[in-house]
Image 1 (cartoon, one colour):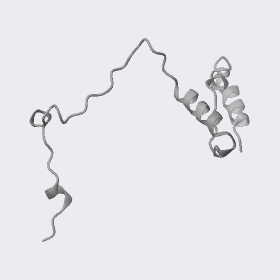
Image 2: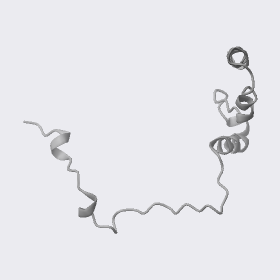
Image 3: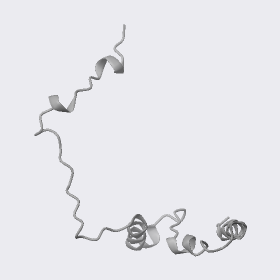
Image 4: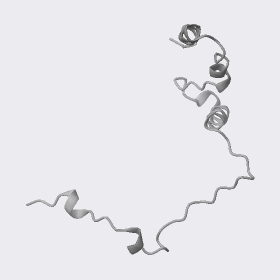
Length: 85
């Protein structure tokens, strides 16, 4: 018989693992402003310059919130027209 992964792996409760071996998560500081995902991606795009992949499109949130006050049917039509083909 060949050993299977289920036989080789053993799951231990956290209480049996030495606390020194468990890494502690970095504390979250609320006094430091954190960047949103879009801001991080825009920063990477600026740093990469022409080397940034052309197939990655970053949309700002303003475009999506601008359609919020319109009727539902008009929103769908405009969102469809704004999409790149």
